[in-house]
Image (cartoon, rainbow, N blue to C red; front, side, top):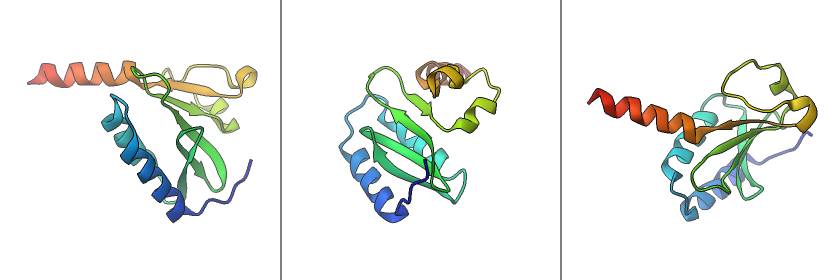
Length: 118
């Protein structure tokens, strides 16, 4: 679904949302948010479903799901995700309409590996 998003207003609302976010993985959410925003200048953001959500050229791309406190879920709800082959992505877009990445497992592994180096 194409949607017009005012990039400045959307970012301001997401900034306000992040300021008030009470989540144990808030820093990681912000890091992933920054990565997504800087992947392409045409990516816009807004608060949708009580979480940061991103669109590309007016098409919904990915939304955080922050309901669980020990995980960060990224919900990819754009039909193009069905073409992406990755072990990080879970779910079958053709039956559920979304594919997910559960970042808690990935973040824990990265932190563990990083700490072992030092």
